[in-house]
Image (tube, rainbow, N blue to C red; front, side):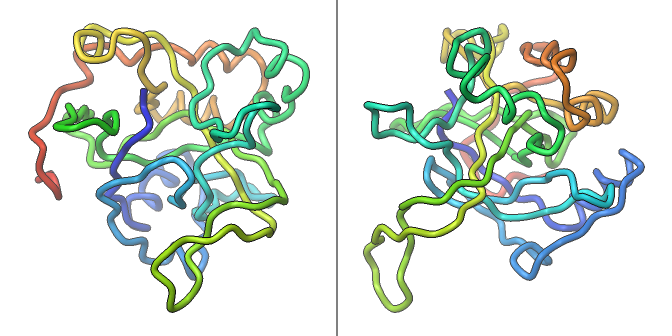
Length: 222
């Protein structure tokens, strides 16, 4: 886990986060006023925060899921084993360089199962997963104007994924193997965005007292 999350963040939340990091925020026409998303699945678009060339944070929309491992079809949504050759050697730049680090805003996360259990950070309207992104050209599913069914289209994409780690005591009874890497502290968010191998120490579970199970309702009251 996690392959299912919600986000109710607005540009206001992103601007406040940027201010805590001592950064300005730059948006796009798509992210000037992002709509709440009550169910984000792999291979769908959602907002992420990445490093701009001028030192600003950029709020952009990107597609969830790195290109699949050769021989497989599912996009890579969660990144766990950073010691594997795939991440250590073949895709090292995406993991370590600041240019490809990002924060993925979320409100709640779960697994896409019947009657899922939702987890949230209490007292934090919008928290962030520790993410990475990359440019990529290829075919992904899109929604052609005037059509109900998605179709494959080749184009240039921004793709993102986020790190997972061992489950803490709150998540483990529901999903014993893993949970997303969640960053709440602005100092840790800044460290992650700064890149480098030393910041990979942040691949660790959020302390259990900073995570809670919430009722299955949307939108969640602040």
